[in-house]
Length: 281
Image (tube, rainbow, N blue to C red; front, side, top):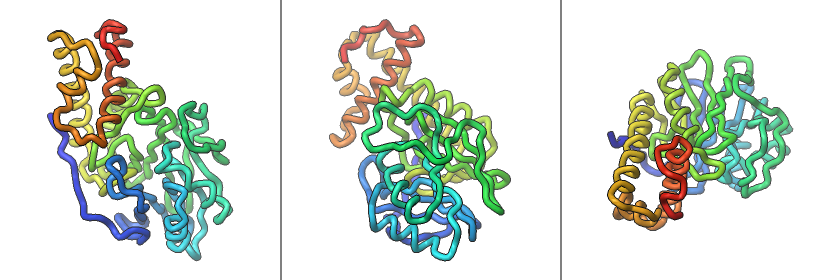
């Protein structure tokens, strides 16, 4: 089963638009093969607002967020994970709004390439932050990143899924911070939940998300079967696997495909389904 992804025309950058009652989206101008049109910043609530994923440290995007919440009180600046397209904008925004930063409170990822100060409000699995008319429940969903959090908007059937699930593309899983076993386990975990709308880190809103989550999980399982089949046929180097499993891939995506393939190999080795060292990196 190959996932069927969504697309959308380029958004109006820096312009807030409502996607559901009390929820606004602002897209940062950082398009790329890995971010689609750019990072989604979500504004939750009216009057008392949580900002989810302030995005890159970009003055224009920060000014757009500040303009959108003018006259409102920002209660929290929430970060789903530490990657440079999601987290760096938090510090300057927190100073401007005098609002606390809420993010994963466990160990800081050793592979972080941008400054990642400890959050003002450390979050763990099951913690909640709330305003007068909204409550966000933190779900620790490592896989794409070890500190990744999704946030369930309680009573609304909405999940802010960060980069764990996105409607426009599958997520990259880059070891050592990324973990394929955790990624797949947390896909399965989300299938057991009842949210019917995902608001993702990049790309359009995702209605009926379980169909895509099932397809993403099946796609990863199929990829593992392809790897084992190729190894049985004699493949012994990761470059051979890359050519066989990703024919014709855009050159800009080859690095991510290789690293995600490494994550699959590490999972198969840990599970005893592939002999360690069988595939030369």
